[in-house]
Length: 441
Image (cartoon, rainbow, N blue to C red; front, side):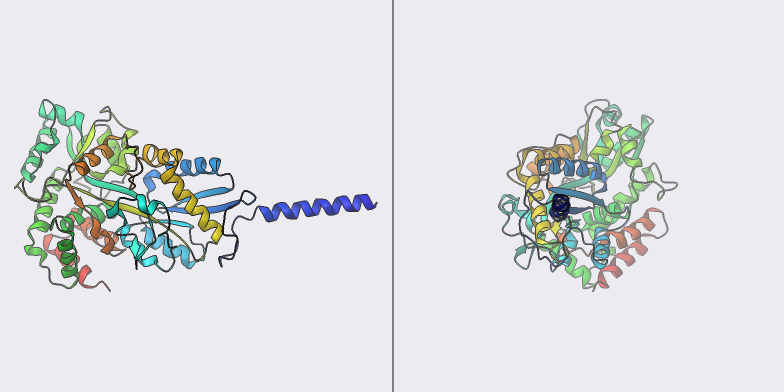
């Protein structure tokens, strides 16, 4: 009988020991062991605001866990149409902050009291210098530069070769008139010229911001322009760059395959149209390659041309592609404990320094890395095209993104949607843009 009782007691002791060893969350006050050990399993979460690579990040999480069996990573997608700032703010309010949050550049400083100081991490030294300007807040690096991205007019080379009757030279388009001529040539072979995707983030965060970036080659002058816009000192009605860009947009609207119902298309329509060669051009960024590849009929022959803002080929912006660090990852220090924080650091270091992590980032997710030590180059044609513009220093650097308010793309994206649909005219658009900036708190 004593042996039986002793056996039962030992069984209970073993069960409680295993339960203690499998603690996955811990308390939210940060009082926990400061290192990830082999005897504990810790669960961390990553809020992903790049929906187009959700599947790739989920696969990366599996590979990471296979190499680090004591850490599991759940990749939480941000809802389509919801800004990551709104999503993360709501998660904090509910007491369920993600361990890692992938945010837009303008969001980072808003979380300076909630994100961990990462200044001592090895990857800080290996990051491309200008990619960390956004991540530094009050002298501390509080975010990890996840991706460098660029955007402009994607072209399907098979379509353009046919339209031009030979080898299409993207450098031949450096004016608005040259772009319209390309549209006409494409339509002459029975293909529609262009798809304009109407998502607010595309119109507000990408297209409209070209008007900011192209104001000057000097980042300080761009910053001053935005400061003057906020102070109500900018008259957009008489701003050459802004009106030049919008004149190009007006021309693009005429050739939009969905011009009769311009707000109806979803993001998914764009990759199919450009991939199948049903349009010659699509305004979007290099992040779209995984979706385009599913419909590719051009043997991976795609590239970018900048959006021209005038008919003078020498004007700044006509030869430059918009490029900048587009997403940053911060680690929570208020609702995730020290074990989770260490696990999150390990995941970020894995992306930068392990072969499998680099492969997941560059080859699988087709991300242009922000780190000098990563020698892998994305093999997809869009990232290669962006990389070529970077090598030639033909870029509009989007460093000012750090000063854009978190609701910029949703508010002014909505204004651009109205303009695209003809619900407001140029004067109305200018009114909404100027009033937005003047009313920023």
